Image 1: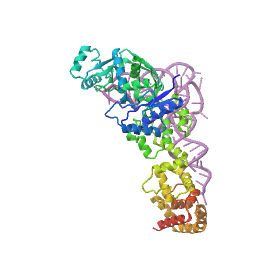
Image 2: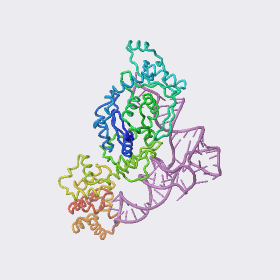
Image 3: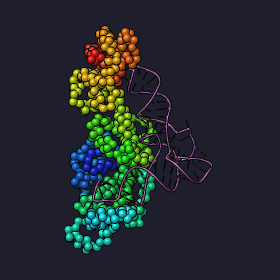
Image 4: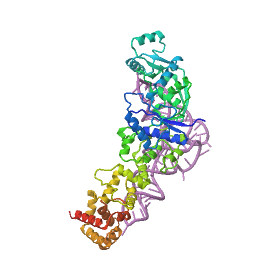
Length: 478
RNA sequence: GUCCCCUUCGUCUAGGGGUUAGGACACCGGGUUUUCAUCUCGGCAACAGGGGUUCAAAUCCCCUAGGGGACGCCA
């Protein structure tokens, strides 16, 4: 029995975004689910646009979302090379084979000529198709044109009455007519192969069993099947997943805040948050729990892949980020923070005891989404930097100078215990509930919401509390 | 223009002839916290429209509308 194999085959022409990342993730999840391999192949046949730096960025970003491959350019494998730019000889061999059985022929039509034909066809209400101009060229005609210095493309011949059927993993049975396809280019005039060709050949040669790709590739499938069948090569099963749309229903783009994985990482998103979110965008999991990559893989199922397009929803992504933050253990929490050191934050590791660090982490995790939020709290507790908003200052003023005078006096006797301080203030002012606690919270932390008082007691000593209460009193006097 | 795909709460979706149409996010409200956040409990909210088929349609069929994709010497 053949081992299952999925693949991701990007062209290194830019940073990977949410859409592609989700396709890669699905492929990786499926491979793990089937206990097979996930393969990475770099489709760098477009020499002008492909850049090596993007290949590196791509591999780094894929690893970041746990989608590590078992076969690929950096680690090799039996069926390499995994850069298409190194596989030219292979493609050339198959071109010859196709020409030998008259399923491929050189075409000398100029791009301008073709563009014109398409225009005319459309104007006449017809579908734009290659009309087959060069299909019947004789060997001598071809020879003559080549001698004239003309560089032909190579076209694959699709007979008009061909019917191509296949079962799509996601969309079900598909039927295409040869007439709707037309003869398509498999080698460009510059000798480089086209995507249609290399992609099909490589998937087959590399023994890929399941191809998960975007719906935009659906109509490529009959073409690729035609090539593979003509060459008597094995074909993978194709599954076309619906695209991700922006909040207005149009394709996801930068306009909708679609960011590269790299940008997302730089903003402080946790990979497991993105993984949990993306895994559910167009794939149904009965359980709504935060899951690890392994759990997601275990429960991944092809029938649970959605046929209809999904909209990108930042609110839902934020929810998974919140879950991810809550799940962070201390070690990772501090690594996460140190990776996003902000300019005016002090170094955290020098004086803080593990106990204090632990208390701090547990206390603020429910209150933060990103490292900047965490650093803000860090500043509050360890750097004496409070940023009180004007609204919150109003709350302070409403409490009044006397309120803080009493609080200071209470702190001097009871120490750093907010509830005890509150008790004293309550006894003397009659204030209670929100009126009592909100001014204290704002005075001590600079914010209207934040950690539990128990944690704040452990993070601030008596002197700090008194100083902050004094500052608050000054604000009321201002 | 031609061909193809899709359409259930605001969003992600479950359900595929008989369901009080289920869950999650968001939102709103209760509880906990003598405060807020967290946590917890609850509520609001949907079968695109029109025709069939059927005892019975969200579910099957047809049409319409809307959205998306493909039609490249891009991938």
